[in-house]
Image 1 (spheres, rainbow, N blue to C red):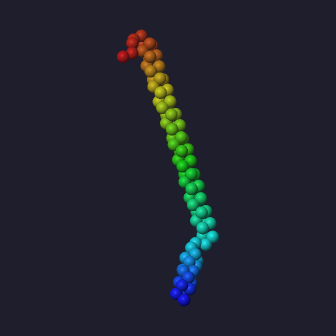
Image 2 (cartoon, rainbow, N blue to C red):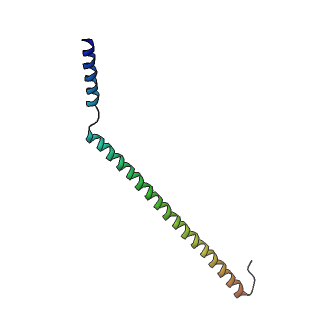
Length: 89
């Protein structure tokens, strides 16, 4: 009788543990949330890369403009020095 009672108790506990687990819908919902989260992180990563590339392009344009302004300034100084007949300092 004790063995039968023990077997019934173990079976009841096993059923209780299985019944307390998440349902198929809950598991699918968690998996979808996980995939959505991964997609959001990937999108954020791509947006960050695009922003960094755009910032680098702007910085390169600014450096090129500064170099052009420097060259123009030197050219103007040379032409003024030649026009006055003197040497630039």
